[in-house]
Length: 95
Image (cartoon, rainbow, N blue to C red; front, top):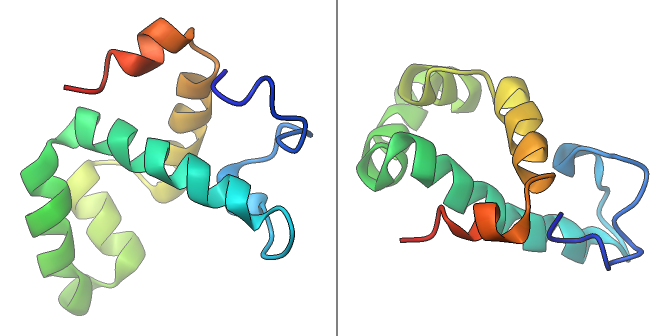
């Protein structure tokens, strides 16, 4: 896991469960990896163009479902499974 040496990332919490406050930086760090992981699955144009183009018409969750073919909850589960891979496997998503 990327954060296995980081004692602040405990309790097997999903990124969405990390509250604002002193530990919020963990969500920002993980958020960077979450976007990289999402882009590795759906492609940069789907994320950067199609998803954002659909936000006003469909809202955040519906746009997520339409463009990424999964709910945000399903993505979070998949992302946390990704975090349990070796660092070599994690880095393989970076072009």
